[in-house]
Length: 49
Image (cartoon, helix red, strand yellow):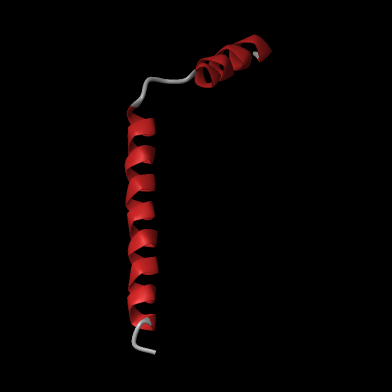
């Protein structure tokens, strides 16, 4: 019975680390230059007008 809190803490720590990693990768993706899909969307909207 004494080991269950350790397991719960370990799972919570792994979850928190995963959230931090996901946050950093999403911030890095937002800092990148526009992708081809962004420029294609502009071209398509210009063609439709």
